[in-house]
Image (tube, rainbow, N blue to C red; front, side, top):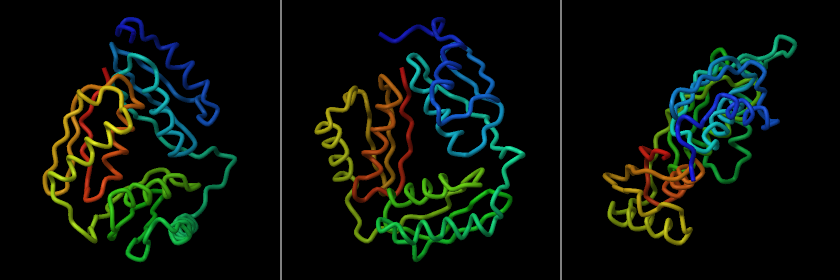
Length: 221
């Protein structure tokens, strides 16, 4: 049974962040109000910022995380130049056989990476963004990639495919998830029992053929 809002303490969140060795929580400040958690402070990488948010969502009872963490490299570490970051991401994309990188453009300014161009599927768009996200020196990723499907799929078939995948995966709380599709854009809504379920529901939709975008309005309750 999930705890009430009053039972979610600041110490719960601090302990969760400290437990995850991949997150440097030394300069993370936490505020808890009801079932909403606010994160402020600094982390050394953009990946740490995302990981911290994920960790907090894993705490039972948390329904919303306001992630205001700033990415700032430690002073004793030399951050790669914008050109080095761009070249690294371009190489990583080119080496990844799952991504058709021929039409992807990478631009970096002050550690902020912008991806533009066209990919063949929505999951490729997400994969390209993750590739940039986990590159040393990146402090933010702006994903302006558009999806141009090789083959379109009828909206009703996309909706059926997603719902059937939820059923096959025995996704907890799937009966409470509403799926609607318009012009290949999927909207998910409803309440699920945990962040991991919310994430899995999103991932299933993202990897479904014919999807060009996913709007995730699912809440955790």
